Length: 175
Image 1 (tube, rainbow, N blue to C red):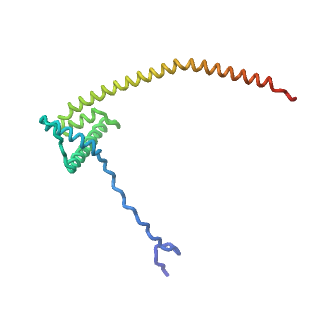
Image 2 (image 1 turned 30 degrees about the vertical axis):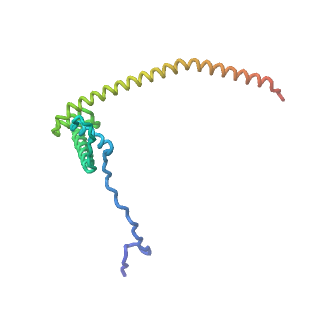
Image 3 (image 1 turned 180 degrees about the vertical axis):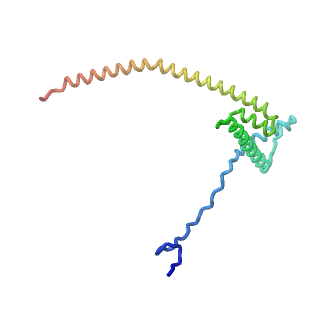
C-alpha cells in the first residue's frame, strides 16, 4: 500500500515561514544638498545679470539633475574600468578617466578636468609637505625632549633602587 505525502513518514508538514521580500540593490544617490548647491551655483553664474537674484530650482528638476549625474558617473566609471582592464590593471587612474571622456565623446570636459586635477594635486602636495614639516618638527621636539626625559627616568630609577637597598638593609634577618 503506497502512502501519500512528501515522503517523510510520521512528520507533519511544516508551514512555510513568511518570506521577506528580497531587497532590491540599493541605488546610490548623490547628496541632494550638494546637487542643489552645484546646480544653483552654475545657474547663478550663467544667468547673473548683476542683480544678485536667487535662482530657484524645482524639486523634480533637482532629482533629474542628480539622477543624470549618477548615470553619467556610472557610465564614465564603466568606460574607465574597461580602459583599465585593457591595460591589464585593476586600479583606475586619472588618465583612464580622461581617456574614457574622449571615448564617450565628451572631449570638451578633458581640459577643464585636467586643470582641476593639476590644481588638486598641487594643493595636495602643499598639504603633504606641510604635514611632513609638522611631523619633522614633532619628531625633532620628541628627540630633544627624549634625552631630558631619559635623564629624569634614569635619576628616578637610581633613587628607587637606592631606597630599596636602604629598606632591605633595615629589615632584620630572622634566620
